[in-house]
Length: 210
Image (tube, rainbow, N blue to C red; front, side):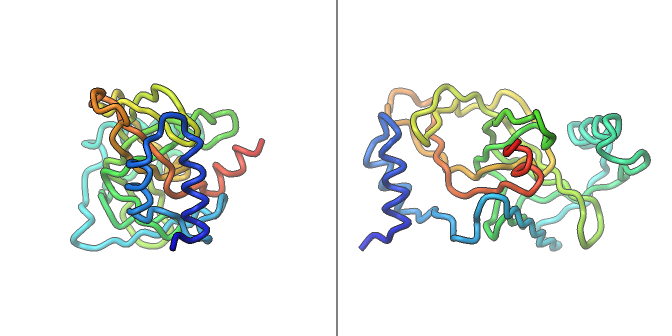
């Protein structure tokens, strides 16, 4: 017997013009429904570092990250002298709002968390960078971005191939998405992206309410 949450998600999917029932049922079968604690603005981030999922890398060799950190320092978003010599690289073990956000999963994000930078993009998570150490450490996300072709209700139609690479702060993540085949089998270059679970860390939630 379908529960109320599943019924609500099914109603949302039905609003996406052109969305096929078969694909909708597949999404529901995966039970990708966020628990009540995953409310907008919560944004809890937990790192579960271990020898299996964490590798120490030289920061300067991670070129995209290195350039991003230098840009943050120039814009006074990070203090001068805080560029680390080494960073920990993770592909899994990062939890947002109690859900695992691992490499290969599809997400919605923005390039910045400051007010006025609210353009939402689509991308695939590649890896996470955290400063070496325990406790509260900065987390940055390497993302392969995708071109959004159109939106049908809650569903986004995106190009499967990525067209750019970005490094963003974890506060820039907004939603975890499920990637499904396009409803037209002849368009193998397109995918359907459907919302699964919110991130909305505190900074972004405040910015989006301005």
